[in-house]
Length: 422
Image 1 (cartoon, rainbow, N blue to C red):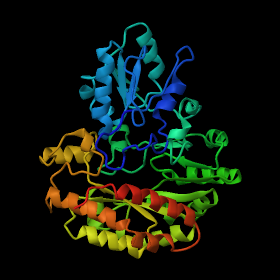
Image 2: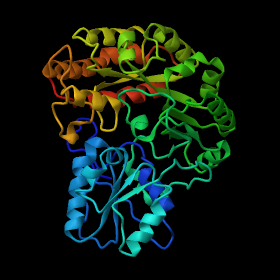
Image 3: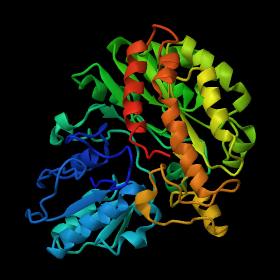
Image 4: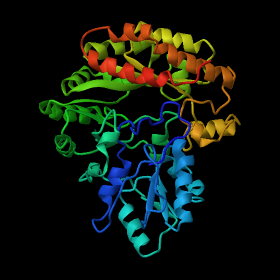
């Protein structure tokens, strides 16, 4: 696992990082038993490039790709073959092949064992690609035993129940690379994995845990007897189904990460998020809060419909509705997305240093403001949202779920204060 050298709040401190990503532990589980596997994380410590090994596998987000390429180059200098994969590599495989002996496009489940056998015989192909999405039945349980538990500060136990998203947002790399097919794991298999966790808290890493409401209801009903507490990512549409909302809470769902993106209906339409309705946000927030669920809301700045008033209007909206915690992003055109294709055709991508593609730096030419203004106001708004006064106003809206709100705001205030000052 490489690191992002520039991310203002993704940097690791004191040898610890956030929650467990499941890609490498899953690959380890897919690896035949005659292979010895070690998982190394460059975010928390230096790598030993001279350590003898037969194959190095690297996965990375876009912002981590420069680090990933550097790691790959160092191992290959010493004669060790390298294979790379992940969403960015799947979108730009030829770029990765300048640094790797082989790449995996898309999901690895159907190709990984064959790739390893090719590596054994010295006959690695350049490209491996599963022609169809994997069946999510009988999936391997990620090898969490290979991870250093002490290095994760916010969530060691993560689990995946679904893949994909039924929606098609213009900026999203999930559907851009993997399509819109929404797949589900058998509920019983998900529950069996969760039963293995030795903590009460866990997190769903699904892109939209409520993407299939009927499946989500079955999952949540089956989860209730376990008396766990959890959080996940979902679209705000789950608030329209009161039964689904109730089951989310009763099954232990204490918080939901929700992409509001913008408080403008025109802005939502521009990014093809037409199922969100900004004028209905207030009612949806109230329903979610009344169910006892905390909201971590995400907002994007830099849309073509944004002008310089968007920052104050968005912050006022957040405070009016007491959204429990928020994260702001600068519009970023990730490779493989329709947004990337659009801005590329318009000549509006002004920086191709992938290390800056962590959503906290401007890499595009905004339509209604300068790049400098967008970046400056983004930083200011983020810090203002996490001023102590604003935190108090949001956190103490009720006693219900208070510990989670305090924890979220403490965490994000620490990160927000690390952003550059004006």
